[in-house]
Length: 499
Image 1: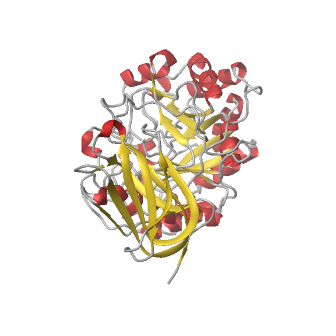
Image 2: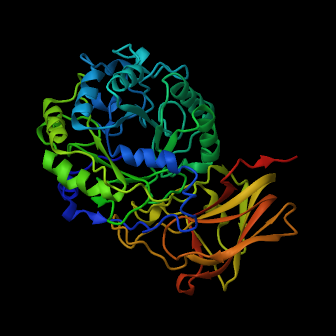
Image 3: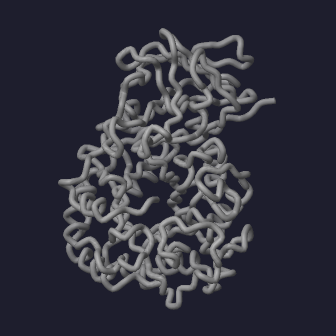
């Protein structure tokens, strides 16, 4: 996550000045009331938490930086009075139900004694397992501990150490560290990923999202995955995340997607900085400007409260949270979370893609194309010539049980941060066909989609296929077809590779 300027902070603090994002009014139009989405109960539990604490505490705390350079001296991590119980007491006083700790940020320093790198607490000035101290302290107060994990690891070989370099990917380290976090600390019901889908050198293909999702599910099946991918969509994520400091975006009225909104309690940034304790949100800004507004929108508020280099929350933060707890109480009359769209729980990674025209590789690069940094981040596929046009995914081998295709429309906007999504060229009429040999295709689905920016799904009877083809029959404004990502896999059960 980026730091934010004082101007960003002041613009974001009040609802009246926050720019609304556009989410669909109903996210479950294709399901019956009794069939509410395959992750519904877990999503409902999350939105019913309503209020939680984000805890950015890691190497950045000790270097006055949001993104620390790689390979810092581990001894520089040295909280002299670390007290996770103090954090938990403050969260409890505020009425928070859960917390999220940055177990590893982009530089790769680990707050637990991982076996995969010496760049961890056991080589630091504080030779103690901070993750364990955190989970035990919060559980003892009845607050559910959750974790944040950066896929991008600039010290340990997961992505480039600087922005514009390529580097080998140590997938074994990613999976091994996730195994440690999800087997050694009890139940972790929410795992927040960062430094992944938005990273131009990583993405959900370089680090296969389906493989990581399956790995997490094998260890903790009820763990929700929230990837900070920059999208206001359920693309490769069980929850929507609205990062308020990025331009003052705010979850809009009428939202029914299981959502969360993150904001920092101080304009200084996500990590602690010398100016952190001197300017924090007021209790009124937290209660009236956030909790009371977000609660009816099914949007859980995650308030970042960064501990200082001593390992304590500043007195100004503790007092603010205490006052919040005296002023805010959950609205128990809020109706239950509406039905949610199915999650593609078992996505397959395509070996390659071809198209009648255009650069089909852009459709399977696993990059979220959110467009916050301008058009340079866009890796969109665009057709040339008249419709129909087609795109064919090659899965490398025949799989049994493929039942879903997902299409992520363009996510670029007319102006940065405004969420005024462009729609010309979005696919509206489609036909889907599958094949085992790439020659003989059989239709499995056809229909129409709304022309907006939200993730589209097409469900069909489970089929055996190596090739999945999307034929584009119509687009918004009759413009050349355009798309960000195309994927397929299983929604109800994992597809099985066949020899």
